Amino acid sequence: MTNNLNYDVIICGAGPAGGTAAAVAARAGLKVALIEKQKLPRHKTCGGGMPMSVGKWLRDLAPDAFVESKVSHVRHTWNYGDAHLASINKPDADRKTVLWMAQRSTFDNAIAQSAVDAGAELRDGLAVRAMEIEKDRVVVRTSSTGDRQTQFVATARHVIGADGANGIVAKAANLRQQRRLAIGMEVEFPYDWNSSAHPHLRPEIVHLEYGALKHGYAWIFPKADHLNIGAGLLPPRGSQGSDRSVRMALKQAIFSYFDLFKLETDRERLRFHGHPLPLWQGKEPRHAADGKVLLVGDAAGLVNPLFGDGILHGVKSGAIAAECIVKGCADRYTQCLHDELANNFDAALKLSYFFYGFPHFWYQNAVKHPSGTPAAMRLLAGDLTFSDLFSFRLVGKLGQQFLSLR
Ligand SMILES: Cc1cc2nc3c(=O)[nH]c(=O)nc-3n(C[C@H](O)[C@H](O)[C@H](O)COP(=O)(O)OP(=O)(O)OC[C@H]3O[C@@H](n4cnc5c(N)ncnc54)[C@H](O)[C@@H]3O)c2cc1C
Image 1 (cartoon, rainbow, N blue to C red):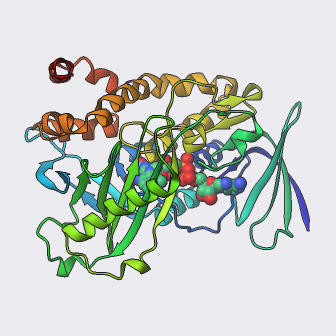
Image 2 (tube, rainbow, N blue to C red):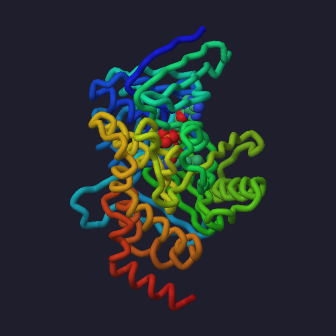
Image 3 (cartoon, protein in one colour):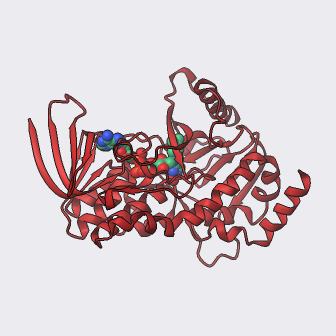
């Protein structure tokens, strides 16, 4: 069976970036198709941690629809020892913030449903297989992920590529031919908070470990009924090692958390999920063909090179892309996106070379500094920019100290 349909905007991929773009475009009255290759809700390999500032981009989506834990503290470690427990807020902060922990299946589904409520057509279980850019329109060819029999050919004035790290839209539009990929891995371990044996395993505490991996970190993120235990490598291009050695290193870092907190399980049965993280590598075109094709989120390479987070930036870029289309300035999308985040990400990239190059120095002097955690949380939320940070006395002083040690 083949269907042919015409839209103002076709959005490929219903992660946070695509779902947000669909909601914004549909609210403005555009005819929108949101195409997702998996049936929603679906698992997405992710820690699911985000600053609550993401809420302001999600408009009418209530946090209760997806937030499972509200985190107020971070427990940092170096090689699982030398622990430093810190509040994410300064003691004198006027407004206390928390970090939101969500399950991506619930979160992404909630955003997609808010797009549907605004009038978008959600077509899940359909994969985009090819895309052709014509003079006045873009043709998108899809088929069902199940039987491949149902084919759906759609055309639109604009296509938004929100199809993540492994998507096809960027390739089809000849965008992002050079990419810098990090890798992350996570496992979900069922956990009953009522029988929590370890005083530091708490629903309001996130754990971050910096010494276990070269150029990366490991984490425990608390959820309603499980712990998301993971590890990621954010190395400079080309210095990652073989796939096998990387996977082994990530698994070992995760197992070390099981040892530390005496989490009993049959390790052979744990389901590890790994996925690439397309890191920011600088300014580059993020739209093609005068704005007929726009890239958002991971498809656009918008993962923060220092922290490895991408949800907030996916949501922001989805909203910016849709707004550019609504306002009739899709050909200015790359500029608008870069105005919002390029300086900040460039500064984060610079800092990431210092941080992951000499993590022990930064652990002792910045992570464990009384202002370290609140500052990092403000950076994550976008309340403070990495570019601002370079003008801070503390960073200036640390920079000098760091250079004098080399
Ligand atoms: C292990 C790990 C942990 C992470 N932890 C965090 C974290 O705690 N906080 C954070 O902010 N970020 C985290 N990230 C990064 C975050 O997951 C991504 O940045 C974020 O998911 C990007 O959202 P997106 O909408 O751009 O893409 P995705 O969420 O990847 O969504 C893309 C969607 O497109 C669909 N798709 C792909 N190809 C096609 C196709 N051909 N046709 C139709 N649909 C298609 C996919 O099925 C998917 O649903 C983590 C990443 C990893 C790997």
